[in-house]
Amino acid sequence: HQQQSILLDSAARFPPPQGVKFSYGTSGFRAEASILESTVYRVGILAALRSIKTQAVIGLMITASHNHVSDNGVKIADPGGEMLSQQWEPFADSLANASDPEHLLQLILEFVKKENIQFEGGKGAEVLLGRDTRPSGESLLEAAKQGIRSIVGAVAVDMGVVTTPQLHWMVRATNKGEKASEHDYFDQLISSFRCLLDLIPQGAQSSNKEKMIVDAANGVGGLKLEVIKKSIHGLNFEVRNTGKEGVLNDGVGADFVQKEKVTPYGFSTADVGMRCASLDGDADRLVYFTVLPNSSGKIELVDGDKILSLFALFIKEQLSILEEANNKKVNNSYEAHLGVVQTAYANGASTDYLKQAGLEVVLTPTGVKYLHEKAADFDIGVYFEANGHGTILFSSNFLSWLDVRVNELGSTAKGSEQLKAALRLLAVSKLINQAVGDALSGLFLVEAILQHMGWSIHKWNELYNDLPSRQLKVKVVDRTAVVTANAETEVVSPPGIQEAINVLTAKYPRGRCFIRPSGTEDVVRVYAEASRQQAADDLASSVAKLTD
Ligand code: NG1
Ligand code: ZN
Image (cartoon, rainbow, N blue to C red; front, top):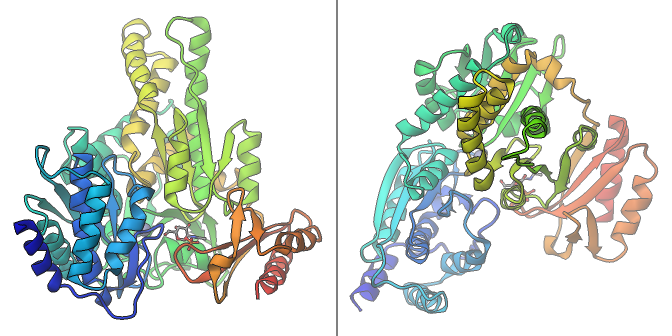
């Protein structure tokens, strides 16, 4: 009863905006920041309940990623650092949309009963809070704290301004009983990067010592890179768009660079040919690019698909070195199952390249939660969206085996190629963020691998040539009318559309085209690719007409 009156009192301080319907999409709740306080307050309650239910620490991140600075958003990190379980999404929606405190309380009581959430006996709730650099973050953080504290005994721990992947990493590390501060995050990143550089084959690293430049989207990633820069050795880099002057995500950042394919603010023809990278506003996306000569700001984009290819290639190389040893010495061998996960947006040339390199490729629907889940089926699962969000997951079975193998080889085969390969894989598992895609750890892994291979960005980019592609969005009355199957590559409803797409696609050499309802905007998206840009453009616009 005391609990109920506390909830009713605090809920009354956060009335929801009129006439808005919130929906927990692939990136949590996102909206104009000024209407988000009640939503963030309610997500605070949800986070506390989730913590009691799972008997683990939960994360709550306030960010709107690559969106406009006046937007904001909120999302939950589950105990392993992954996205909120999909089973709880409908509850999140109903909480956010409850019209008044009584209704809210009613929903909570019903849900607590249905999910059998036990307030007595277990550990109290604990929620780690983080926010990006958006000015609205401060008051929204306060709303989240009040939501958490409206559950009696729940504790909110403010981690301050952090990248989204840092917060996910902290949740994961805390629940594993590992050191979990920001300092520990930097430590692990810097020491595993160092470890990879120390294991570079003699003579390889020469071609890649020149400086690289990072566009930090005027967001939180730039602040963190400047901290890392003070203690890291073996990489010469400059950080631009650190937020001291420009506006968050405004003409800068990974989303802008990937979609517009032009240089972000702060880059010019003076940078032609240099290795450049762009982060997004909360540093969970990463793309590379080079400025093209005499091109009025055009760039050569090296996207998430190419980062995926680089990572997969490197891991495959290390595994085959290890497996050679397996054949010679049969005791304690392990055939690691390596797989890569993409969405239908992956450039067709990347998928062909990966398959032809002998890799197993799986497609999932758009949205990190689907890719992540699929990647977790492998011993080593590498996933990336073309837009630069991705990471590498290692199974605990494989990591335990690797630990034992490193010890064995350390005593029987010191200095061997096998030991080096095993140590490299171990270092990758520590450098890369196992909770969620992380632009910072991704960047240092790309840099370590380029040095290992002795590759320039141009050499890397030549792994394959992207097929020309075109993306369009079509505003429709009801986007849910479009229903897809087979990882969004086929339309099942409305009837007849897929047949029409097939007929149009067949007209173009190397044509491929699909449509799907966006999970984050009120539009249907069209993607087309073909052997020439004009053909991809034509295919996309003719298919877009079908959806009108
Ligand atoms: P939707 O709006 O469902 O296409 C977009 C991106 C996703 C993902 C989510 C979450 C494209 C085509 N889609 O999803 O890849 O990043 O936002 O932020 O880029
Ligand atoms: Zn982001």
